[in-house]
Image 1 (tube, rainbow, N blue to C red):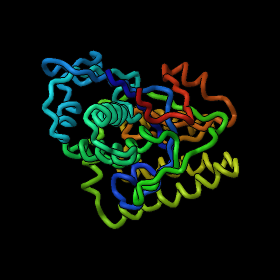
Image 2 (image 1 turned 180 degrees about the horizontal axis):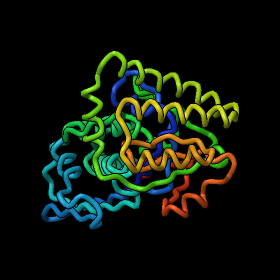
Image 3 (image 1 turned 90 degrees about the vertical axis):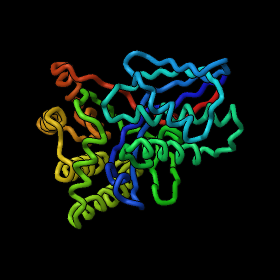
Image 4 (image 1 turned 30 degrees about the vertical axis):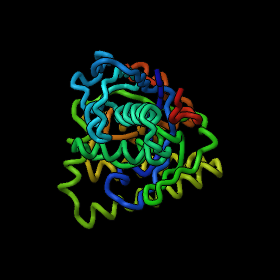
Length: 289
């Protein structure tokens, strides 16, 4: 049996520029939650997953089709990455599966290749996605260069930075489809600003200028709101954080936010509002057994 696991992710800045820009930069951390895939030989194709995951197993079937694999396999996958929260759950599953297939069938894929194929598979499923989810699922917390497909490892997590999640009712496809309709010069110009924000945010992280980093996170979320809009839940959480003097950005397509709580005031507020917390980690990414 072959087993692989990959962690979810939370973008700090730069998103959703990776969906719309060839030269996007994204600053992102891994989260402690992960997806696990186990692959074994079988006399027929058997796919098992937890009940909260996709019952059609479309990611699994598309990956097998993508690599033209018809061999009978037993594939078990599970994930404790919150579902429909924009935390890279589907990317973590795909990356783990491809790593297993790579080992079993000697596909000779590099780690970067694994991340690229995961992106191709999601696009084959008409999912509007950028490289960052798959990059962090493979390489862990990084400054991600989407043009050159490189990742510069992050070495610290600011004190008071964590994830809150609350879910959403729509999909990332719904959200990015709205963005496609806004593909004007103004829209692209705002996406390019997320790249500039990320350069500044990485510098602020290195200098431990936490207030500057927080303001850049806020700025990134404002750009997202003005270009793609926010769900009711995202707007409520954004306003709650700002009202209590916190800093934040939406982690992905909605349903979760990355928070910088410099005054350590927000956790009781989140608890009162039944908003759950996840911790960040540095050494996430892909592990193969």
